Length: 630
Image (cartoon, rainbow, N blue to C red; front, side):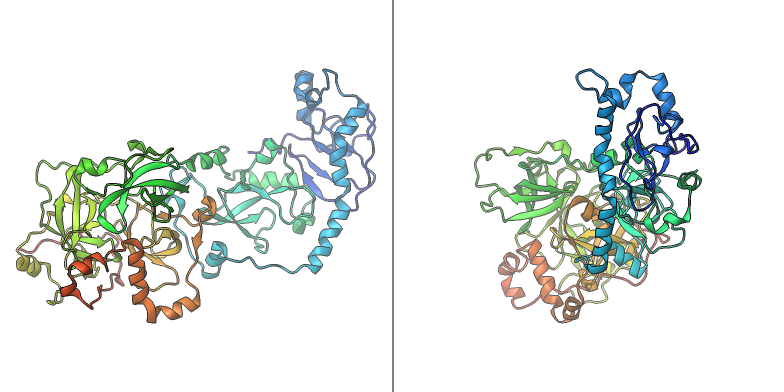
């Protein structure tokens, strides 16, 4: 980590005479410490000292700070390297013109552009100071995660909770105390310079950074996305030839910044040297525009349609249904969503499929390879298995805040099931929904009771409180065997109160500021900040629709901030209307096809659901499932 800092000499007592003449530079009005690419501490010329260029590495610095009487090299390392290597390895050899070494005059010309920039320092600094006096700070419009977290002392879910997100599986030991090299914004130099900062607090991809040397002073702390292009591991400046300059506020604190850094950084952690490469690789997505897929039909959940990938942002796909001529009939989902499949999937398992009116593929469109889609766990259907008519509990795909009484309506191939929500099904089954047997969104009878979640009974069921034993007897049905459900609970790392960015699955194009409010084994209750609890959604801990804080900023996706106060004030009076509107955004048919088919029975009525949240949290200490009553 310190190769760029400890290989230099600070011998400034040598004579200023040189074997080769060097031109003097124009005086500059101030002295500013600057650490260049090999770690040597330099100062801008004070009007008496000249500039020199290292003949080995090409670094420009104060001549009196260079090594030896000749002042040809910036450090002992460069001097020895020059002696041991051929001149072809030196910067002077690399600057040869037509095979001839540059002359003394050429050397002076080569360094003049940088010297000229340094000479402009005084004028530039004066201009900045004048601007600082007259220019008022312009508030940044929009939502800021940093301000939101600081002002409320929130914590955010760590990146390691999101395996599907960039760096989710290779985040490593990035934590508080890790040192990085970042741009120094407390500086008036005309060129971009850097300084070392330490992570004070982590919030997803975002880190609260503090410049080295500020100790407990948080006045200049700032938030930055760790995966951004301006954050580098310690040592990057040394290898990239970038200057390290201490912030102006603390320049006076130390005279030997090199010794300070060596002391502070000894034993400290930094980012892996290939961190930026890993970030880049983790943001390469296999789905491309013009790929054709099968996706759930948002107007008839029981079937799929062909859609074409129109956009890919951070692994999220904007799919346009193939028959949409103006490309406005679209659907958003993640590439790992269980709602999308390869072409031919529906036919292979016996799922309903809406045939396209388009008889042949449009030019440039091609089927997405089957290996790009998420694989479901293989199940053994040969023995005891799910049967039509069996009862269970399931998250209502049209009201994700509720877990409802449900029935298996059809058993498909490869472990897939068509599920219907009791009491609110369309006569033609157009609102049945396809869940895999291993889906974390279906549960055995009694799951809600044992975990103190309010179960939504069938619409119109009057025998309350709802009792499964009575209902099974009344409907002459049986409960699906407990052993057939997915009981795997990963060590997900989420805790109640953690902040994250989450898709509003009722309007899946939106990614919103959200909070984990309940955890039931692997099931998370997601609350959208600023909105009423009835908009909450039950989501699996491994859902590809959950993201770390800072994901939108990293990928360029638009983040929806918490609802403003004016919206909150209007929620109570208009919540039912909004809720109905949100459901129609996703399905479009619950109030049309379904009601038209059953208008005699449902005329003038609205769907109503019980609150799905509970004040108590189940952390897994209780039995996962309730024992069946005889």
